[in-house]
Image 1 (tube, rainbow, N blue to C red):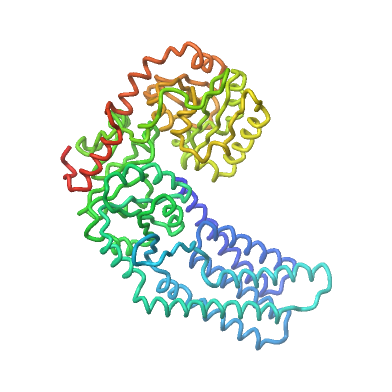
Image 2 (cartoon, rainbow, N blue to C red; image 1 turned 135 degrees about the vertical axis):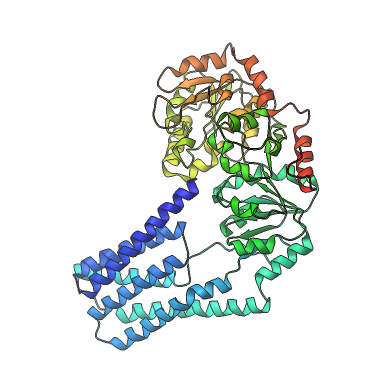
Length: 558
């Protein structure tokens, strides 16, 4: 959902920039003061650079063209030598007209890495070929106008035009060079398809969404590899290619367009495993002759774990009976035969003792979730993390702080992480060496389960997974703050096994109960089976069910 929100914001920004570019043409055409032209030009270029990070592509090329035309109109107001202007405008407009169709022909619909028989293509997605030269020339002209308004400067119009034209022509030469290479290889798409046919992957791990969400793939790769079958990661964004390739030595293919998906669905692929409920998952399930398995990237009581969209998959892997009941409890109708109780292989190595004890004290792991993309998904206590950490420090424990990986991508959340890290660093002593997020970020959360004696977290899969350790835990209740969703035990049965920390009350009461008598130990033991299943070997159970999905178990058969 955060990706959709970011997309919406970028679309609004594109509309705003179009209006700004139009304004630039108007103010230059009517010969308004140079200061106005300069300020509007600079605002346009800054906006293009910002939006380009989120939404690179042809839309920005169009705006860049408008910006260049405005710049040339401005030059007309300040320059008598019009032949240069005519030539420059002709070059820029010509390049702009052919840019998008040329890009569609030359940029492959499929990119691949680690696929035998095909060269790696991990190039990052960039702006169109016009953007750099256009933005640079427009920005230079705007800065010149601004400085000229302040002091007398020589007129650099010819030089700026020459730079812009040369840069655009150079990019055109590179485009033609790419065209030659594409022709020699017939087409990249065909080459990737042929290589996939030869490699014969039995299944795909389907990966879409935020680039920083690569942890969603990482958590499943070790267990899917135990099937002993060739597979590939299917990413929907070229930006995900390099991140996914770092997680496995198996092939990774990226298909940004729907047409590319048709080419990579080679006959050997019998199943697709989905690690989230990103909107682009819809594109994959349209291939009805394959088995589509929803894994998700965490088993929690949050709305993302009972989203109606999950019902479109052929099989839904859940850890325990709680994974089925939460759909029914929230009125989401999914046929019972779609569910598979597979356990939670990620907790197989979670131990019931602390493998890294701190002499004379206990270690409490503080692992807040992220804010999510919508209000009903916000259970994160990170914004109030300093209050929580101070309360923990008052209990004379060592604190290990491990926020959700996606929290670092949001400005406010990243700032909160920085403040908590500073607090822990300042409070650290030789006897209690508190651990900041920088010290915990490179190990899995399960590894930090094993290095802790207790947990403070939010409504999330972290709490469910921690049940396996049988150690005490507390969950933060945001009800009193109005900043997120309340932790309601009626809605989230998991909370019956945790100590609720009311941010509007006294945190020490719940923390003392967790760290001393622990009256909820028996309740945790009961809910452990309800949430995680009762399998002697979680990994073997998962591998068996995944293997059945790949080898043709009918979607309707249990």
